Image (cartoon, rainbow, N blue to C red; front, side, top):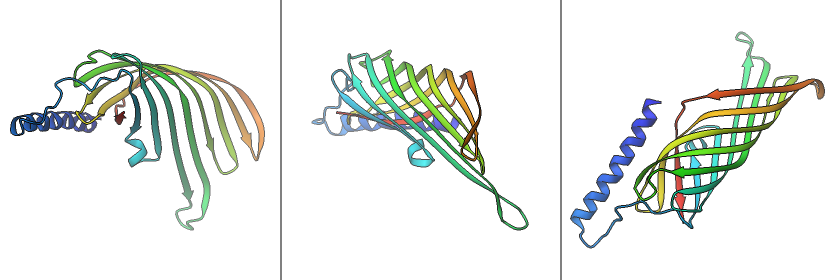
Length: 206
């Protein structure tokens, strides 16, 4: 977690330093002292997990006012493992997991005219997941609502770098257990989670 914060801080400082250096060495280049302004703009956001891991995180952004953005999220997480006998190396169990969530989010910036602005989010997602073993599986489908916070650095080149964290989520889901293609049990589950797991996001505005 500390590494991620250091990366974001260094990127922000580096971008600021480059902008200051250009403004001093090239007087004819005028870099804006404020943020790019999201009002009336569209944007696309991607998470670092889509590049370095088995997850994909994307968002479509619409700036409604200088301070407020409406967002449509799509998040996918996949994981697959095989467990083998240490002596024979024969596979005795396979494990697969898929998590999917999609839905709207509203974002409110605290310093919309600045290059660096903290923000708060509220989101409502449809969510589903499945965990499969060699012969059995467990599946969930439902919805989640929650809040997030982050901080975004708007570069002069119409893209932003953000450290983002979903801090509180409440979910209600229908659960099914299956074996060899048959449903053997079902029920409901409710859970809430508070987390501190910031991740890096890149957002492009046009």
